[in-house]
Length: 299
Ligand SMILES: O=P(O)(O)OC[C@H]1O[C@@H](O)[C@H](O)[C@@H](O)[C@@H]1O
Image 1 (cartoon, rainbow, N blue to C red):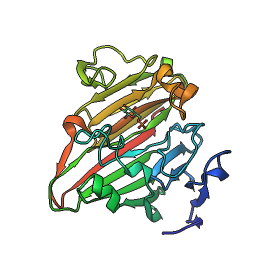
Image 2: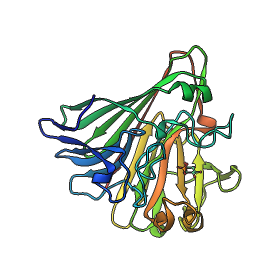
Image 3: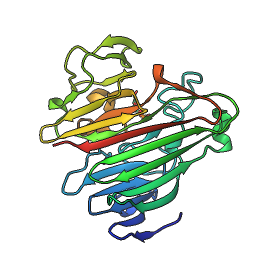
């Protein structure tokens, strides 16, 4: 589906180069979505939702003000889709972190308004021959983005090959926060986690999380709902088929070495949902996995 501008009964979409919206940006195509319920921005690269503002609300997602929007470079912010593996590939550690789907263009297959007034966009991704040389399991991925009072991503990954396929993934949400040092995260207490700042050693989450240093924790099999209680609002993330919860912020020292984060590290917290580590899947030939994640402002 090719579109520059599309008018639906009550919504409007514009396909624009990033340079039209952000000064100094490259020309990656971005889809601006305007509906009575919300506005959103989605990059065709990675089918990455970059911005989601429910009507009358500030953005729930953080997008780096230092982002350059250069094709093939991961976009820092919004909701990158990390697949077909999450983090370091455990079989081939030299492969790109978080898989290859976030660096490539997805195809916009359809745009429609649902009966409830939500704007629904469907994207698809097929790995190239070069991708399959690195990851020899043919598969396809589809993403349905539903834009309403809340944001819902439904991600379907299908094994189209003849062998069982290892699959790990994450919907890597960057939540915009006003005061990282005062933020409370609910929905992880009492759970075990792997600490990626301590060689993935296993600990139990007994104390309230503090976000004043680097944090990189993986909660396997947790699911449920996480609440980010910021000074002026609470945001929630819930899901099914995405039971691994990852909480990440680089902290000040590490962020200094990240060209697209720097002093902006305190403007976000990543609370990611997927299936990784002990939750990694083995998809049988022909099998699909569906993960649904909803991001919303609670109050
Ligand atoms: O810089 P990247 O590749 O987007 O990764 C960002 C972070 O993503 C998180 O999911 C990982 O747990 C972190 O270890 C990682 O640093």
